[in-house]
Every structure is written in structure tokens, then in C-alpha cells.
Length: 427
Image 1 (tube, rainbow, N blue to C red):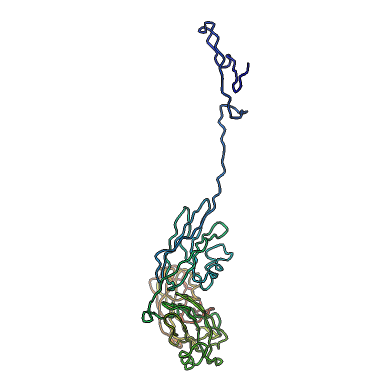
Image 2: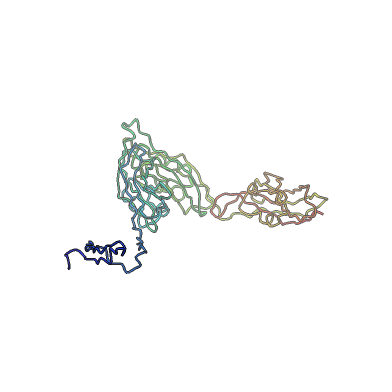
């Protein structure tokens, strides 16, 4: 007999009665609701397990509206949802030129690449070095230009790419509301250097303060008088005059505070160059402001022959030793003359080079230095007795001098030149 939707199960399979207690009674058929689960062909005593692969969740970077907006500062806000990814540096890139902001990101994949290749009118500031959980990213930025619209993107390093938010924007409030309140730009030269003898490299910080759209330029030349006269003229009216006077524009239409670099070449080596940096500015108040006249000495291709140093033989007496020698400074001045000695022969050997006397660290009997003159000009001879040395021990000694010279980057730095290595034994 078959009933639709049910299965008849024989009594013998479901209700085996004990023979002594059945009394001949026959049980009615048992109806079992059919299972919707598929039949298992495995051992019914073993429960099957199912491994589920983790679901990939990409990181999501979102930029939110800025807050606490003032004339020169604002609080940037954004969110990073890490998902299942590894997040490295998280940073903001912002500026008043949207094109510079977008092009600074380009196809770069790391914060360091963006920082090294950013456009002039874009700023990059790191908010955190890594993230392992979702986080709101808050970062205050300063040195902004007043009354200026800024564009912002929040970026995060992923495993092999850079992801950035859509652009948001905010506008700073005015810094001044009348001509009398306007603060004019400031110019600060932060570094002078050169990579070649015929060039001058300048690093500067320009703060436009309450003005806008500044044009920054450099006036320079071998004539101090002509350089100073150019301060009273606008950029377009400055007439170049070969090596005596030159002009070059550094950047146009800047706002806020900017760090700028400028290199000029084709200068005469070993020559004094005069220069000024100026800014023409607009806004509620227009005008021009310049630095005072400054000077830069270009370098000489000839570094000059190093001082000559002679170490004499050491005279030993008991546990004392008399060190002696001579120094000729040649064209250098203010030499620091000193002896070095000790049981560490290798260390005494490698004293010389681009270093200074103070950087040569003393280590008891292994290495000692003794100053015998601090301002040698010309030539002189020196002697010094050192005492309480270790009996039965091999020592080495040298006479050295520290002097100032140019390194390969044309920067003045300290060098140490030493005479021959003299070894001796304390009996």
C-alpha cells in the first residue's frame, strides 16, 4: 500500500517487540515524513565538514567635508575601511590647483613616490603609517592661503597600488578685510649650496600671508651696485648685463606658504655673486617685497693641496712614550693638530678622511687622541709624552691635523690628514 507523501516502514525495522512482552499484538505501520536532505553514502557516524574560503573585501577610501576652516588652516577628514586588505601609508594631497593635485598622484603606487614627484602647487601630508582596522582620518593642515578654494583627496597604500578618494573642496576665509590689515609676504633663504663650481643652488620659503597670486624671482650678478639698484624696479624693467646682472623667474601665481628651489649655473668659478629674491604680490594690497642683498662665493675647481704631516719615530722610556712630528698647513689655516695612539692598530690606521677630531671616539688604551694646537697657520713641530701605557703591549701612533676644505658636493666640511703610522712596544 502506498500513501502519497509518506513511506510505509515495516514493523520489523522500527518496532521490534520483546518476544516475552508482545502478547501476540501486532503494531500498526509507522508513517515517516520523507527527508529533504540527499542520501549520504558516507559513514553515518561521521559528520561532514565544509571549509568556506574567506570573502575578499576591498579597502574603501572616502574623503569628507573639511571642518574648523580658518584663513590659514583647516581640519581634513576622511574614512578608510580596510576590508580584508593590508593598508600602508595613508595621506592627504591637497592644493588650490586641482590639476596639480590630480597629476601629483599620476600612476604612482606609494606615498614616497607621490611626495618625491608632486607638482609645485600641491601639498602632501602623511596621516598614518599603517592601518589594521577601519578608522576616521583627521589631519589639521596649516600655512594655507586666505580666501582660497582648496581641493583635497585622501589616499592609501594597498598591496601593489594606490587608492584615492574622490575630490572634495573647501574655501578658507579672508585673512584681512581692509588694506590696513594686510600682512605682506615674507621671504626666507634657508640654504645655499652647489653641485658644481659654476652654479648656485638656493632653497627658500615664501609665505604670501594675506596676499595672493605672487610672482617670485631672483636677481643676481657680480655687481653689488647693480643688484641693489634692481630692487627698486619691477621684474619686467630689470635689464640684464652679462655677468654683472641677471634675472630669472622662480614661480608664478603662488599662494599660501611654499618651499621653493632654484639653481642658476654658468657662473664664474671662485667668484662672489650678489643676489636678492623678490615677490610681486596682489590682493587687497599690491606691491613688491625683496630680501636684503646677499652674497654667495662659487667654488674653486682646485680643492687645494692638503696639509703635509710628518710623524717621527716614537721614543719609549718605561711605560711612557714620546710622540713627535711636524705639520705644514700650506694654503689652509686654523688647523687642529693632535696625536692619536692606542693598541687598536686598525683603528689608528683609518683615522684620516672626511671627519673631525671630535668625532674620533676615545676607548681607553685601545684609542686615545691628544690635542697639541688648535689654530695652526703655516708650519710647526710638535712633541708630546704619553704615560702609564700597558707593559708588553704593541702600540701605534700618528700625528694628525683637522682642517676645513670642500667635499665633492662643494660644501665646506672638516677633513683630517695624518702622517705615517709609527708602531712601538712597551717593554
